[in-house]
Length: 136
Image 1 (cartoon, rainbow, N blue to C red):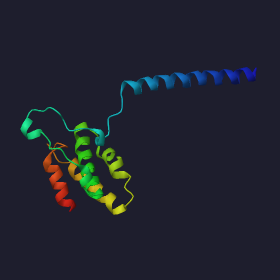
Image 2 (image 1 turned 30 degrees about the vertical axis):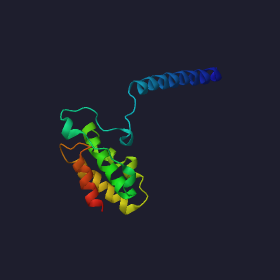
Image 3 (image 1 turned 60 degrees about the vertical axis):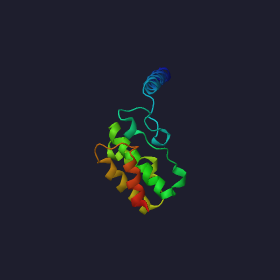
Image 4 (image 1 turned 180 degrees about the horizontal axis):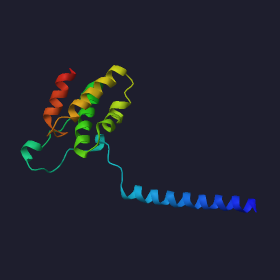
């Protein structure tokens, strides 16, 4: 009888695991992940068409250091707008996976500074100009 009891418990646990995985998959399908900031495009339509229209920018002309600082600042501003906590913003690819320790600390400081600023748009030309001014 011990063998039947053992296989019965194993069967019940297997079915429970399958049901749990099925329900978790359904919940994940209902809430798709957010797009990373690097794939987002600037907002197309907003209230002020003249003031909010970002000029086309070329990130390839920036140095890698300035580009990473700009992306970290934009990610921090977007994260605050999306209601993400600061620690999640600091764990993003732009900040956490920097191999140079001093550059990673600088990116953390930039992301923290821009995270706590209010009424800032990630595509604001002032954000770009201030980051580029500090970078050079």
